[in-house]
Length: 356
Image (cartoon, rainbow, N blue to C red; front, side):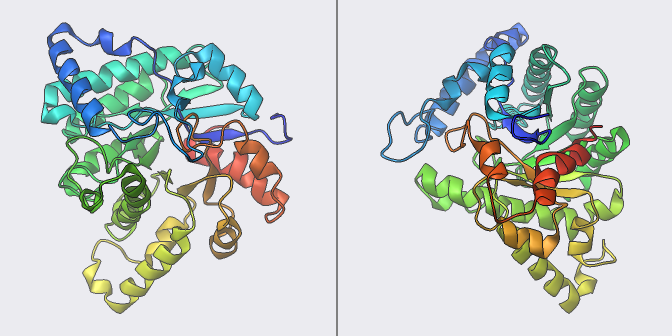
């Protein structure tokens, strides 16, 4: 039981990468890795904590250096400090899905990353869990790696960016990935990805600062993803699939589902892959959205959609997270009920990840 009274499951934390994991790549890919490091350094030069080391604001410029990001023993200390009983961790998002458009490198990079993350979680597997990073440039290879990551490494889900280069997530070639996730009973987690190197930009290329890019790409990208899973028919084709839309706030969701429903009612023949309102798919108990603890729109989301869709996310330990107060902030809210707090902190994350 967490320090504030609820058993808390963090549906979206970061870290879980061992410090030396990149050196474990097969030797033929070491030159690829060095070139990739150089590109990442240039691409993210104005990202807080990566390129930017000073700010007049509240961003945590050294958050990535926190020991718990790479040391599982220290991570447990920080979880106890924050009041988290179990965490599901996500790798960073720098285009490992396609790795310079080199299929072989992408496969090796994701496999090596997943192996290292599994070693991290084995330190305390009941408390530390991870999702798999997949070489989505090749959906068949991605499905095979997902199966390996779940069956052999014990991972509880997969992460995908909001779109896969020139493809939306409802592209038929991606069905093999969703089918595999459904068969394995693990979560599909849409998590950023609009800013990664080699991604095909959608809107983000119109902005110059990380402030603008980050503010824009996460919610807009998740709107795209929600439309793909609902209007695009993924949830219709795979009726047992569980999906989360993370790190993009929650306030836009009631508006977006209402708008999608309105457009479906106006021209349902233009959505031939579904047979009901888009919101009915989302609210079927299989879809979830990640919450920052201080979001003012939360009561509206609950009153509009119920308390069964929101999951708590620590975002540990990124430049924009509220560590170490995220659980405390939710527990001390007076604008939501105790039932909603329990749903957000435990019940909904447990359903998303299939945890008992």
